[in-house]
Structure formats: structure tokens, C-alpha cells
Length: 204
Ligand SMILES: N[C@@H](CCC(=O)N[C@@H](CS)C(=O)NCC(=O)O)C(=O)O
Image (cartoon, rainbow, N blue to C red; front, side, top):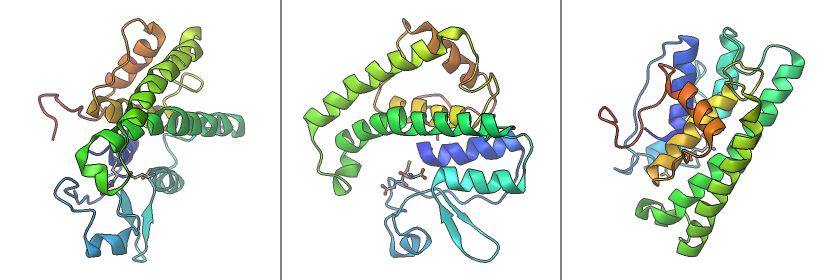
């Protein structure tokens, strides 16, 4: 499953929301058709079709909209302060980690040669940066908390799940030495909503 689509799937499962889902065959070119570009002009999943026929793209925007329709359990924070911290951690996970692992994929996986001018040196640099930033995450989690914000599972952890997934696609894993990041990863993997990882027995 695609890492950004997985965020919405995890969100739906954590909320217990059931909606009709259509899977798009990305390697088969399903996001690059004219019909799909009418749903999202960037040619990317996920996309949520609303009752009025409009189409909402961007995984975090979709999840935010679903949170407004299904407030419980709150995954974007409960109090104003918690909401702000979830926001901070969503941005950190997306911009500081997820996108770095994503860049490795964009610059190494042949399918994405149409999307970027692939550069092997840049990909190698991003691999190092990702591992360096995992050390930062490990230090952040050294206070022993289970999840990123207030010990309560949130959207920031969901982006973290997507990060683990996108990294696994390019064979980047949390080193055993980063015990706090490993503890956080184990807590995420223990949740029933954790996405199927590449290479796992039941991965699709
Ligand atoms: N910022 C977007 C990123 C969406 C995205 O990159 N989707 C990828 C899959 S993870 C995609 O559909 N790629 C299709 C393609 O490149 O043709 C989000 O959060 O939804």
C-alpha cells in the first residue's frame, strides 16, 4: 500500500469509520491516467470523494476533514495545547523525516524517473540524513513516552507509521541501537491498524 494512502487507512481504522474504498494500481499507471487527473491534478492518492462530488486530496487534509465529521477518538489532539503539539509533530514527522525517506524512493525507484530528475548522490545523502534524524527522534523520545504527543496516539504517530513504511520500501530501518525510537516503533506496530510492510507475508 502507498505510504500516503496508508495514513488514511490507519486513520479510518483507528476511528472505526467504514467508507467505500477504491484501490488504484500505482505501479500499473493508475494515477497517471486522464480520468485520475480529474480527481487530483497532481496525479496522487489518496483522494476522498465528497457527497457534493468534489474531490479532496492530501492525506492530512482528508484526515482533518474526517476528524470534523467523526470527532472521537480525537486524533488531532483534545485541548488547544494538545492540538498545537500534534500539529508541531505532524510537521516534524512529515517535513523532517517522511519526506527525506520519500526522497530516497523518488531518486532510486525507476518508476519515479518521470517525476524527478533522479540523482544517485542525492539519494545517498538523503539516506545519511534520514539516519541522522532518526537519532534526533530517538533523543526526543528518551523521556520514555509511548507516543509522540502526551502519550496519546495521534495523527503525528500515523505520519510516523507512513514514514516507517516509505523507509522500508527503500530498505531503511530504525537501527537497534536507537532504543527509544525502537520502543516507539514497537508501540505503533502493536496497533491493529499498523500498515502491512513491504516483504511481510500478507503485504499487498
Ligand atoms: N502530500 C500528498 C502526497 C501524495 C503522494 O505522494 N502519493 C503517492 C503515493 S504515496 C502517489 O500517489 N504517487 C503516484 C505517482 O507518482 O504516480 C499526501 O499527503 O497525500
